[in-house]
Image 1 (tube, rainbow, N blue to C red):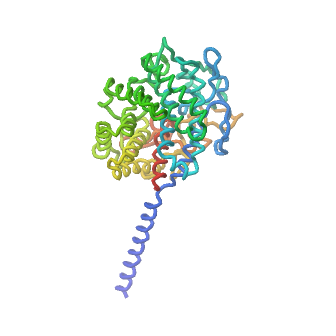
Image 2: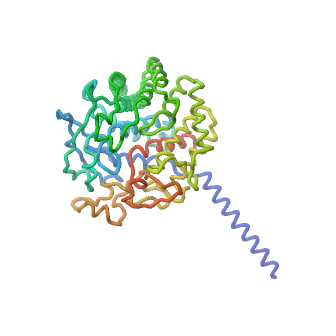
Image 3: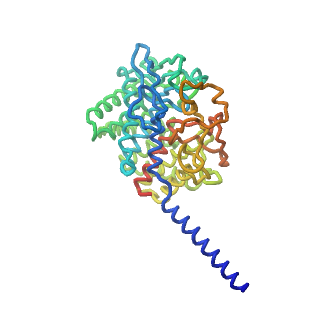
Length: 462
């Protein structure tokens, strides 16, 4: 009898193990709902909109019109665009990079957006930015690059529609140029022109025209933009403009098929020594330039550069104990997502495709839950609830929202669906608290590369 009980217990244990294995196998096959992630990421961009709101999803109905008095020095209409992060400054440099990356994701992985039913919303997200950039580009050699004063804005905690502080507008022109800002804005407009080329030819042409003017301005009047718009230097200081010049030249080549732009990009690549560093982010476009040049020319020099960078990420880059590529403390998930985008695009060139896509997918899945929790607001297991974001922390008017709200231990009142938070430290440590902007703020550029990779994974059938 005892022997039979032991045998029964053994059989029961084996059945439980087999069931657990099958459940894990099923989960591995099914993975995460990338369609839902795409939809929610685009909801985040709706929540970041400034100006007179339209076509808002009911899940973002708590956002109201704001920044309706944003004007240039001569009264130019500068309404619209996106608030940068948890604050209400409209920083043109990272906003333009965000737009370029969103457009690149649609260009590369339109199939993923279509399968997720999000292509139209992705186009709307891009157009919200490009409409604003057109307003900011008031003449051939003048571009508004910031609305709102950094520290004054950051001294306020409340709803965007309740802002009372002055919101000065800052611009670049021939006497105070900014090649990186003009170049990145040109790249955004050129990339967006490709997105709209088959659905709105007239708008696409308008975008190309502005992009060409801005590129000419950027190349003829050279200077780092944060030396001209000095308030931006405390928040988005540029390390140089060579990469933005080559980057924008390549986007204009893709938009126009004018080989002069490609030749200029290669000249700029050599002039500024862009072959000696890699990466992708609001201040770093070198790997993006490598990808565009590799696609356009097929030259070994660019493919080898990409392979070297990606192989380093696969084999040598520091990782957290749970597997996140760790490239810096501030916005660690943003950094890993941008690497993942490079990996995906390099894989698309046929270079170590399986290995690079595997690593890219592992980074996204870490952010969605494999790291022990979700780092995307409103998605998955134990997502953040105390993220550093003013508007979503505030109860609906007329309730008071101020620094007492910030310091309270309560969760944010409104769910900022789809927002990717900064992320953990090098040891996977993360605290879901509002006062930790390093790890728990959200920002437009955080979601841009991330969203593109998710669309790529969806396109591939994951």
